Structures are given as C-alpha cells and as structure tokens.
Amino acid sequence: MSSVSPEFDHSNREVIDLLATWLEDAGFNVTVSPLPNQPDKANLLAYLGECHPDSQGLMLAGHTDTVPFDAQYWQYDPFKLTEKDQRFYGLGTSDMKSFFPLILEALKEIDTTKLKQPLFVLATADEESSMDGALALVQQGCPHVRYAVIGEPTNLKPVRAHKGVMMEAIRLTGHAGHSSNPALGVNALEAMHKAITDLLTWRQELQSRYHDDSFLVPIPTMNLGHIHGGDNPNRICESCELHFDLRPLPGMEINSLREALHQRLQNLFAKDPINWEMFPLASGTPPMSTPCDSPIVKASEKCCAHRAQTAAFCTEGPYLSELGIDTIILGPGDIAQAHQPDEFLSLASINPMVTILRDLIKRFCLDKI
Image (cartoon, rainbow, N blue to C red; front, side, top):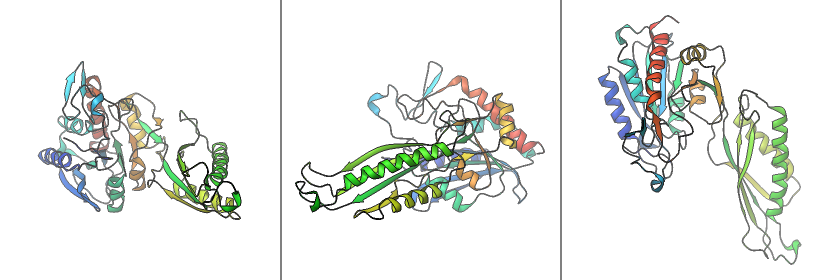
C-alpha cells in the first residue's frame, strides 16, 4: 500500500489504520492523530502498560512514508512484498516499514501483563519530506516515556548521533539595464559572487571551529547546490538566487546558524545598492546526540555486541530528544538500500532484530531500571 511522501504526496492513512488494527489486536491502547494542516495524514501513538508521571518506558518509533520511486528501474512491484534470494523486495522494506511488524513479532514471547514500565509504539507521517509528523508530536507532547529506538536502517548497529541539515536560499535583487553601460544597472549576479565568496569563508570558519572525529566526515559541510540568475548575456542581471545546504554537527544550533548568516549578509551588503533576502527552503532538522553513558546506548551496545556509532543521514531523533527522550537509531535495514530501485531487506537480519527488540523491551519494560 502506498504512502509516498514527497512529490506524489500520498496519504499514509491506509498504513496507519492497518497498523492500528494490528496493535489493538495485540492489546495496545491506540490513538491516531491527523496532522493539523493535513487531515489525510496522521501519526499513531500506542502503548501497553500503565503510564504515570514517573514512568520511564520505552518507545519503538518509525515513519510510515516512503520516497517516490522510478518504476522503470524496478524489477519487482514496489507495492508488493516479493521474497527472492533470501531477500524481501518492496518500497519501504529497508526504510523502514518492516520495523513495525518486527515489533509485533518480538512481543509474541513476552508476557505483556507483567510490564513494569509502559511500552510505546510511534508511527509518524512525512519524515521523508517536511518532518510534519515529528513536529506535530513535539507540539502535542509525549509524556511518560524516557527512552526510544527509531528503526531506521543501520545494519543492526546502534547509532547515537547524527548531523543535522538545513537547506537555505539567498536571493539578491539589483536593477536591469543594457550591458553596454554598467552604470545603467546593478548586477545581482556579480553581487552573488561576493556572497558566495563570503559563504565559503564562513564554511572554513565553521570547519575550523567544529570537529568531531566520531563522524566519517568530522566537520560541518556546506554544499552550493543550485544557482540561477539573469536572462540574457547583454542585459545586466537583475535577480540571482542561490540554494545551498549546511550539515551541522551536534552542538551547532540551526537558529543560531541562520542568525549568523543574516548578520553576515547584512554586513556584506550594508553599503551596496542591492536588495537581499534569505529564507529556508525547509524547516531544517537539528543534529542529534545521545550521551554515551545513557542507559539506552549502553543497553543497545550490549544487545548488538557493537559500539554505538554516528551517521551522516538525518532522522526524527532530534524531535524525540526535544521531548526529553534519550534516543538511538537501530534497525535491520541497510542505508545503502534506502531510496534505491529494488529496495530490499535481507531475511538474515530479521531474527537478530527481533531478538534485539525483545531484549530491549525486557530491559526497559520488564526489569527494574
């Protein structure tokens, strides 16, 4: 069933409603919450056990949407689960719909009547596009849970930190005129050259200031991804727009970075006859970092027999962290399969993931913390 998020913008309600039925049959209390501005999309929050203000609890979380796909490159039906060569093929098998049925499989050998702490399941909308599902959860609040596992594809290895991402635009407006006399206009393209030079200087300053060797690329990165300006070689360019992304390390705040960029542009063009504006192309996702000594990090390292690592991709983890929930990223899929034709989940990863989930549920919901 389709729940493609960007471009086609399909509803995720079929997925949410099916998952709600499964969880209700398993004894969960289930709440489905339509997104405030998109009633055809919804989050699901379900729980087992008793919730009270002092609850610790464990949340198993993931998103229900997928990215668009190029049908001509798929050998298998993206909307049908196909088993072949010890793999499950289908859109979202790795990233990350498979996580939800594995939760239910893990519960089959657990006596849920003996839970000492509540177990939550969270399923969100629009992670692949706007993060509106996670943002709605932050506004709604999610009390009585202290620890979370997001089942994004990590090859069964826990991830405790990842970079953030912000996608920004700078638009400069000058004045058009005949190119035979530069005094007849104000060239926005030339002014953008000045802005780009300053951006690259800022990038170097950020990379000199921030460094984290736990990341494969241990510095914040900036990519100049798109530029458009002018309409004819013999006309002074009136308008120019640049799009770029910045991927901050943990400890770098998106709002502070935007304020710094605003101040730089203000200083840069203080004496120039150019009009400038900056605006985000998306709300941006903050970086995430859960302390190494958090119980969820230590428990996941033990269950996986692997030290917690970092990742370059973004997740909904920072939004759970904002709610005071210590979060790790841990799932059976492979990020190399995410967003690819013939996306698949290896059958060999299923039983180990079920065992990991079962162990974590026992640790945080059955044992005393």
